Length: 502
Image 1 (cartoon, rainbow, N blue to C red):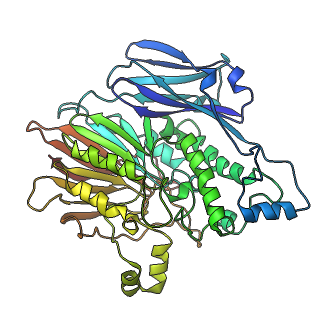
Image 2: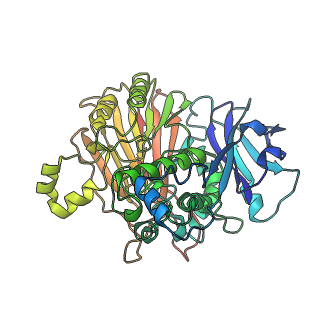
Image 3: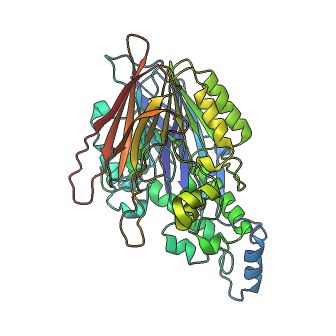
């Protein structure tokens, strides 16, 4: 069907490029090479035939691997169709040595064929290596783009990619951090809530349905200058998951996806299959770091290893690693997570008294980080830092920047930037489902600045850093509205926050 590339991790001397083959036969017998050009040189890397990993919608152990209810229904079904077979072959290719802060054009060449049209867009990209150290005021700042919540079916014109494509060159990001809900595997909600997919007649159908949602977003091309593909292909991407990479409130019951997540066995099976797809398409590691001294960035997944008991949103060893990262900071630290840290945390009884039964139920089936015992440890690690800590996150379908002292009376700052959504899912009334803005709570950090960003708009944000003469790091946040259908695509990001961090 298609080959495509997506830039993944990057350093000042190397870049990792994800290469995928969608429903292609005989990949291991084909000539596939990655060509890259930049910094006055051009090279190519032949992909190792033994390096391919394979995901399949139908597996040899089906339907024996299905939850008990689905196995029984499969056995009881009289009419059975042939299994649904979809495949993804993929590998992550590291190219090095590269020059620091240099832009490289990427081309994927398959069987020495030249391609045109949409297929060409899938096989081309660009990646820029990190600066060896944080730029100074007279240089282009190191820039992160933060975005979350992209519901592709409601962006048929590719407006998110178009907004990214037309960003001014001096504002374009070095790296993108996409912090959750890059796909909505549980939506449209009617398809997964009211329709049973799994094993009664067509083994492999449910996995194929999840796979197709990735394919639709990862290959979205709208002409020469729009489509989510524009964003994915241009520059390094760091990913963490949130609930819609699975289903609402995963791994716990969340209402959406009812017929396919009613029993604990069904939820465990779905979560496992969606995890495999996330690791195949997005990130194989729940904890990743970037170093641009003295700035350090940590991308921490708080969903994919979450338990159902309310104890952990990440593995204990990953939380300890995160704590060691904070302890070892030599300058400001940027922590990317899938849900806000600044959110009210309440027990069931308190929530009932404060919010009423309806809102308490909705809170319970859409759990935030404070619902988990590890939250206190995470907050403790952040508070222990000798340097400012910046949180980049999404999830809640509104934009917000909040800032305060990390510790009372200290010069170190705590900043949280929320950018959500890039493209909102629709409500029951077929209207964009934007969240209700909530002020940042002050329970754990003395927040002194708090502002809503781009009310009722699809959006992403850029966060720019450069080194000041006194050794502090200047941080600037710009908010970028995504054009509405019919609006001119002429992106302009307004500065919504600026602060010097120690």
